[in-house]
Length: 389
Image (cartoon, rainbow, N blue to C red; front, side, top):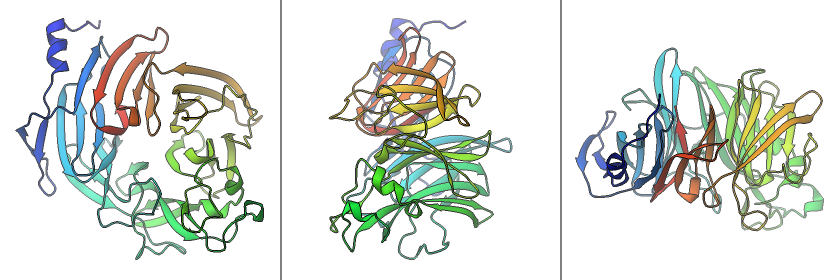
C-alpha cells in the first residue's frame, strides 16, 4: 500500500540542494556540494514507483539526473555542453543509458532548431561505451555534415540502433505552386538504421515531395536566405506489431507510419491530408513524443498546442483501425499546467500520466481519472523530455 510522505519530509524534498560533478573521461563523476537549486518538488502524494530521468538543458552546463519516485537525487552527472533526451534501455539483460550531447564545433544549420552533435551510449554506471554520429551512405557527405540530431534515438542492441538528423541540402523537387527559389535549401530529415557498423536502411524525407505542400511551419521555400525546416522530426517509435516506424513531424502537425523496409508511407494521422478522418477537436498541434501504450493498442500523443491557434497542452489517446483507416476510440486530457510551447513528453502508467513539460519547465505525474497530482517538479532549466522507468 502506498502512503503519503509526512509534511516535514515534503518540506525537505522541496528545499533539496543539488550536487555538481567533476567530469572524468569515461567514468562516473564525483560529487561536490553546491548551493544551486535547479528544481524543487512542489507536490508529493504517493507517486508510482520508478526512477525519473531528466536532462536539464543548458548551453554551458548540461546535467543528467536520475531521481527516485519522490524526486530525490540518485545520480547527477554534469557534462558541460548541452545534453538532451536521457533514456534507459535493457539490452540482452544489460542496462544501457543514452543521451544526446551537442558539439560546439558541429555543423549547425542556420535558423533550424536542432541539437547537432552525437549520441552517447553508456552502461549502468554512465561509463561511455560509444559515441554515435551520422554514417556515410548514398549521397550523404559526412565530411561536411556528420552530426546527428538530438530529438530522438532508438537503441535496439549494442550494435544496432536507429538515429535521425537534419541534413542541409539543395533540392529541386518542390512543387512550382509553392514558388520555390532556384537555390532553396531545406533541412532534410534523414533516418538511419545501423547494424554492426553498416547502414541497413535509410529514409530521406525529401524523396516525398508531397510533404512540402502539407507543411504548416518552416516552409518559406521562396526565400533562399533561410533553410526550410518544413518537417521537423521530433520522435520515433518502433511499432512491435509490424516493426514499422511511427514518427512525429511537428511542422506538419502530423504523425506518420513509415515502412521500415521500403520507406513507403503506411499511413498519416492529422495534418492537412490525414488518412484517418479526424475532427477539429482531435487535431493535434506541434505534437511531440508519440508512442504506443495499452499493450501497443493505443497511440499516445503529447499535444503541445500552438500559441495563436490553441495555447493549451493536452494528452491525446487514439485507437486506430489501420486497415479501415478509422479512429475507433479517442480521449483527451487537459494538462493542468502552463502551456508548453515546445518540446515535452508523456508516458501512460496504469491510471497515471507521467509528463515532461518541455519549455514550460515542469514534471508532472497525475491521475488522469481524478486529476490528482501525485508528483510535481518545477525546474529552473528546460528538459526536452522527462521519463520514468
